[in-house]
Length: 161
Image (cartoon, rainbow, N blue to C red; front, side, top):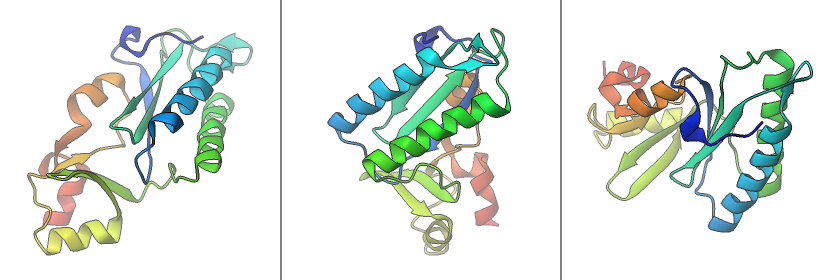
């Protein structure tokens, strides 16, 4: 069952999918429809899942589930990944590359490969104070507090040693 993202508790589980490019307004409208339809019908062993999603910065799809309502596992998580795969195929984007790094610069949001990010660090184009997106966050509260942080406070810090 779909509910507004803001109504989910802070301990709701989230999955963050980062697109390799910005989504157009038309693409976002279609993704909202697809994801709303999916969440509305999402179940775990026949039980409704209470969930939601957000699109952030025209480039991130954050899917969330209230684990206090019903705990999702294997098959229900796989179903959400299939939705993301469908979105990827339809819009010719990559949202499942866990080795892509998102960060902010003056010109906006950038997504690069891990090796490109390491080169940017080496060339001092990215610093410990550069805002990065920690897509490993797994709770709604984590998204609010620790998703966008200076690199030195994220798993990205290892590139600066």
